[in-house]
Image (cartoon, rainbow, N blue to C red; front, side, top):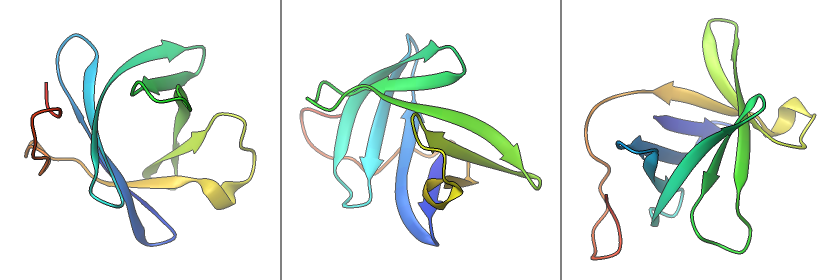
Length: 97
């Protein structure tokens, strides 16, 4: 899944079995993580001090968006602009499932 915000690449998430995921941010840095459901949110934990990051996914005007937990303004919504099956371009020993 590929996301943009205000027309700029925001990040991409690749999903694996056992609720594992791989996040690539807008600086092309990659983090292994895990996801879980909390109420109406999908939360991601990447082992960082700021975790977890929880998002509400919704459909608007025929497209899919995500809004971070605690955010009420649509100014911060991210747009899911693509889904494919290609692996993310993440290199290194500490990334990937």
